[in-house]
Image (cartoon, rainbow, N blue to C red):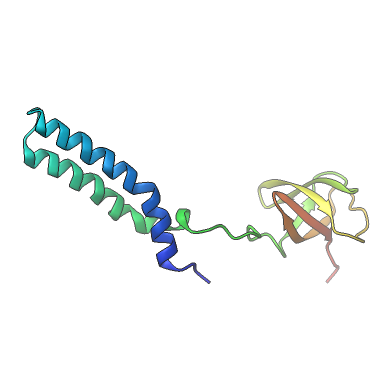
Length: 131
């Protein structure tokens, strides 16, 4: 389920509006001092705001709240070393710190495993079931 667009837009605006304000203040100050023409000041502000608006669809995901599970629950991996009770695992090309799930037996180096939960940046794992 995607987060509501309103929340994402508010988060995006919180990061963009201060930059727009600074750009507008500097542009119009330069105009008042006679360094640039009025149309140049308006064009600079318009281009600065316009580039952020045009880029929003491409950057939208970076402003959406992160999923607490990081998408790894249920993923399969391999123990990079023995996990008893903690160690390192490979999930695809990534190396993660891992901890055994309560009641799970030790996992030997090179053994297959499955992620059952995420605790901050530590994956909670158990041995993979033979299927």
